[in-house]
Length: 294
Image (cartoon, rainbow, N blue to C red; front, side):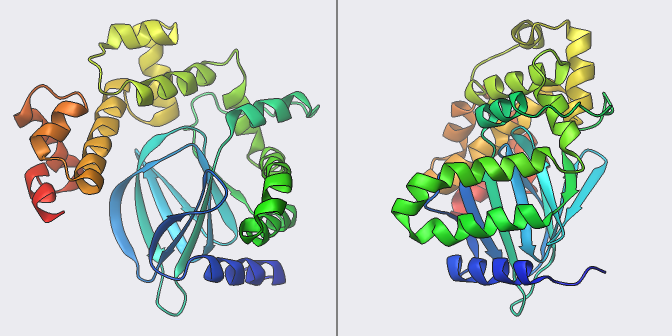
């Protein structure tokens, strides 16, 4: 097994100074979150933004369909688009808590970087799910350390933070799985259409949208949409939309104290019984029970 490097130790020290209690927290850089968990967590549904995810210490597993992605201090996870996933924290303790870091992807910056990279795109699988795990390089560790050091220096962060984030994205694109990310961002690829469609669905999830309308938005036939969407996300467009609605309903109840019936209505459900049934199937308890416990 690889030995912990001085850079990895410095990242752990920086993370321990940034997040001193369990939970998930925003930082002074927009789109950068840190997390700490002092015990393993059983598998549970978790919506992910388009992001690069690091386990600076400890280990996580993410589940997408039948695929399992494991990452730790030696590997990072790339989630190229907003995805409703399942998360399990497999290695965490009071002495060595899980220390997580997630940097939201700037797709505009990524696209600009691609224009300046004259490296030919490697042949990648056309039906490979969008997620991938890559090894953390020394260059990537360097950039992460510099970004974390600046979080308590507002002027330095404002002037130099963007350049460091750009560097982080560059090293991800240059990584062993960077070809997969470049393929997803090619404007003439079906995957790029799915990324745009997912952005649309996350903005309009509460509206009543038929599969034919979804296909029209993606500028694809219904059959082509189903195939490509399933290739990338391991679920159908309607299944994706359903999970996004349920996660947003849970957020409304937990963070804003909205009743179960109102939450279901606000995210696009017209049938309370269907909402309750599907909510329980995803989260393991009926929405009324969750609302009463918050």
